[in-house]
Amino acid sequence: MIVVTGATGNVGRPLTRALAERGQQVTAVSRHAAVVPEGVRHVVADLAEPAGLESALAGAKALFLLLSGDLHAAGASPADVIGQAAAAGVRRIVLLSSLGVATRPFGTTRIALRALEDVLRESGVDWVVLRPGGFASNALWWAESVRSQRIVAAPFGDTGVPIIDPADIAEVAAACLLDDQHTGGVYELTGPAVITPREQAEAISVALGSPVRFHELTREEAKAGMIQRMPAELADDTLDILSSPSPAELRVSPDVQRVLGRAPRPFAEWATRNVAAFR
Ligand SMILES: NC(=O)c1ccc[n+]([C@@H]2O[C@H](COP(=O)([O-])OP(=O)(O)OC[C@H]3O[C@@H](n4cnc5c(N)ncnc54)[C@H](OP(=O)(O)O)[C@@H]3O)[C@@H](O)[C@H]2O)c1
Image 1 (cartoon, rainbow, N blue to C red):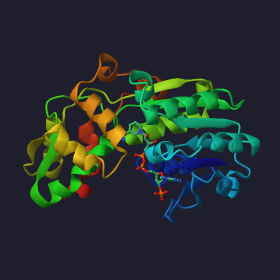
Image 2 (cartoon, rainbow, N blue to C red; image 1 turned 90 degrees about the vertical axis):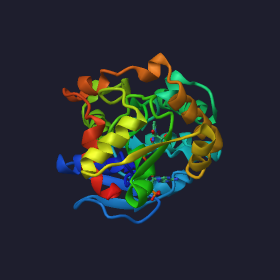
Image 3 (tube, helix red, strand yellow; image 1 turned 180 degrees about the horizontal axis):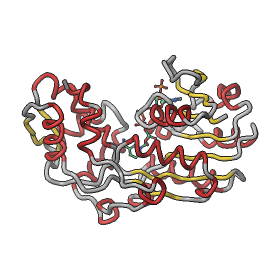
Image 4 (cartoon, rainbow, N blue to C red; image 1 turned 60 degrees about the vertical axis):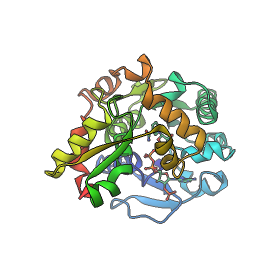
């Protein structure tokens, strides 16, 4: 049995589906009740209180571990989840980390994520670390304004990074959970090309079949919106990346191709699949 945390999110939902479709027994974990694919068991638990994971982990052989940013910032002790999983007999853990751990190894969240990677390496279980860059699904932040006004409002409209489709992260995670050839792998996951916010707006427009205007926000305006969704320090770190990505953040990684044997999906494909959110 494989336990998937973050099971109702951008990565966890397609991962749960992919594992179930491959005939795996899956336990999906999140804090709220959720509809999951047929045959999948859902357990309500909060990773901030690892004791509540006991029933989810019973009998598990592998764990996909995804921790939301606020868990690090809140000073919770997510490393306990790794110890608890190992004690419960889990033999393989795939951790969703972040490219920022390598490219900007400072700031509360990234220091905490790096520490978590280190705990995992020392845990005695087989491990894989996934370090994705920015997600295509961050474009959902624009969904409301596209629906109501056909506007994408974002900062740094002509500066891009190679954002990744979370469905590709999910497929890489599934491969790493099922195939021990990936043990000890640290995979940097990006999309196939650098794409700017203005180009993303254009791709959403094409998917909708209707014009979408791009409106450039100042850094301050963008931050005011972001701190509704994430800690202020993480918002600043993210804005630093979006305004002036380093060469390592601009690099298109070969790791999706290496693991899946195919190129990562372009943003346009994500936009087409998720067009209903923008209608
Ligand atoms: N967005 C980016 O650009 C980016 C880049 C690099 C790395 N990352 C990493 O990607 C992760 C986010 O992935 P995502 O977009 O798939 O997430 P998401 O769509 O925001 O979904 C989060 C999932 O985790 C569950 N969850 C949240 N807090 C929880 C808690 N305390 N206990 C148990 N379950 C909890 C949520 O369900 P409930 O709310 O029902 O609990 C949901 O299933 C974060 O770890 C982030 O650091 C993101």
